[in-house]
Amino acid sequence: MADVLIFDFIDLIVRLLLVVLFVQISNLLRVTDADVIRSRLFLQFERIKRFFNLLTIGGIFFLAAALLHMAELLHLIDGNLDVVEGLFITIFQILTLTLLYYIYDALKSPKRGVL
Image (cartoon, rainbow, N blue to C red; front, side):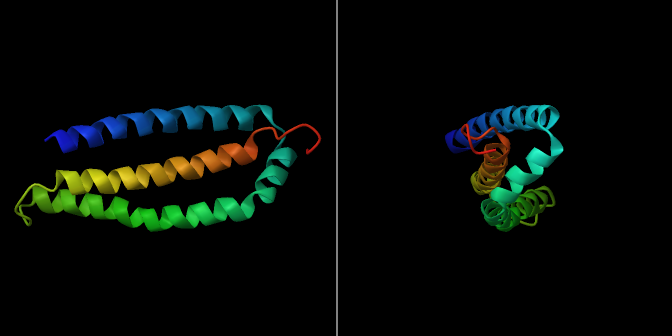
């Protein structure tokens, strides 16, 4: 039971961080010129693409967590798999957070003299 509480706490922290990143990215998109955004994303395209591919693989964990939950609800699986489900969701959320951070990092104003 304590393991499930740990995943719930991690889930809350990651969700808060995701909301903060959403707000930061939204603010950057609002105040930055579209051409500047395109050029900054273009400069970091390979890194963003690499982490998006990693997130795509992480989507398997997201799907597996949903399938485990449905199997438990339909009584197809005996036992409590909340820890495994929590682990799968946490992995997916951390990968999502990483991708959003790299997008934010690409969009934020670089050091003076570079764009």
